[in-house]
Image (cartoon, rainbow, N blue to C red; front, side, top):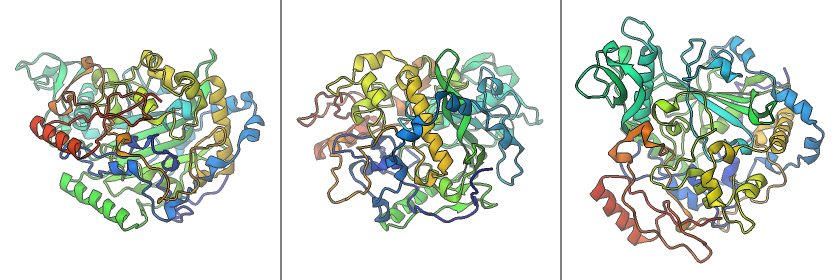
Amino acid sequence: MGASVDAASSTLSNREAVIPPQCYTRTEGEHNPCYICHQSHPAGTRVNVMDDGDIQGAYSFSEIGETNQWSNLFKPRHQEIQSVSDERILEYVGEDNYQPLTQLASAGYVPDLEHYANPEQAFDSQGFAKDGSGWVAFNYKPLPSTFWPTNGSFDDVIIRLPPSFRQFDNNKENRSLYLLNLSLVEMAIKDLDQISIPVTDENVFSVDLNGDGVLGEASTLKRRDFYLGAAADVPLLRQQYPAGTEFLHSVRYLDVSDSGEVVAAPRFKELRYARKLKVHTEQALKFLYNQEHREKEEERLPKYSWAKPAGEAGLNNKMGWIVQGWIEDEQGALRRQSYEENFYCMGCHTSIGTTIDQTFAFPRKVTGAAGWGYIDLKGMIDAPNLGESEGEILTYFRRVGGGDEFRQNLEILERWFGPDGRVRAAQVRAADVHTLLTPSRDRALELNKAYRQIVLEQSFHLGRDAVLGQPVNVYEHVQQDSAPVLPLNRQFHYDIRLVWPSSNSIESDQLKLAPPIPEVTTTANDNQSSNGGAAVGLWWLIFTAVAWLLSGRNPGRKPAEYER
């Protein structure tokens, strides 16, 4: 079974394991990947009031956190990579290490989706699990940039609602009903007033789904106050999932098909599970976020408790969710993550301002009927974020000056940046997400080999990021009083949600783009301005505040950017 790990132990070698390696990037006062996670939003527009956008402009660490304990980032892997043949690593990643998990005896969640390693066997064309387990796959855009395939992993996320959301009052399951309730969840998370749905016979439900006053066939669903079917007594809550919502997230190696295409491998690096135990009121959530602020200000180190039974049911994030994970043992079999390995996931799923109800993927789903089905990046447009006009990936390239937080991905730099360091914007705009984010065969295999060494060492507590070459844009220790930080004109507003083609949905007034706002002049070394969101100076704060009060909308602040 490989290395022995005591999953129930609550000991930590890194008491600040919630700070991911990416937070130690050298921004040098201009390269900003921090905006993806750390965000503040206009008052009243988010249930998540972590309001941590100011962290973009500071290395806000405790004394313990100042030292980067993710030493795997700095460990040379070249010789280890060269010692593994392409054939051997391809054989390894082609193996299914998921299916044995379904036979586990556990008091916690036991993976119950059949054939998950091979999505074509597991899901139909609309994303519904073929085994009747209730899991549903959806198509979404991977979050920049750790979960981009070019940086080491393919992934997918699937959702399941409780049985009452899939059934009528007589306990009879109905696929169309389930899809309607899933669509209502999507509207709640995205603040939509209506959404596209597959053509549905309203007479089956005796409900005027599209609000046209007659019962017939509907391809649009209007927002409702309550869910449908046996869940008709459950209210739709703004930016929250109903209690009992579950997510499964597979993080996979990179495989190469017979035709030479880089694709998701059957082998999992990790399996992650989350379940919403409790729905909090917005006032209660505000209190919990304020408590997070107080603990940070007092430099109280984070603590999370095991759900019962300890070691089998994951960690409680204090915001209503349980988060649980499996990772490879030395032999490649998936095992329960230790307390510290689970702990690593908790910061991003608790105390950052960008998430919606602690989640990343579902808010980024292709909106409406077109978004149901297993993730597929081919043909996917580089949709802009809400409040932006340029594609998200293009914007990220410009703001970061690279294709990952450490500006270490040389292949991205060679493909999408010119020799002068400027983004090849026209080429990026012309490419789909698959083309932009899929690595070459050689890079994919090297990333696999590098990560496999971490598995053999069982050194996840020292970092689980596969890094090629020696990183130069990462701090080993941060001197907070002297490290260059990002000025206001390099800090950006960002909404995790995306503007997909209008045929998929009709947005509510709250999410419509605001009228154009004058761009802010960049500093002398900023080569070109573009759209986005950064406030500079008191006049700008006053302007945006007045604009928001007059319009009742997100002011959609415009940042100064340059093509780097």
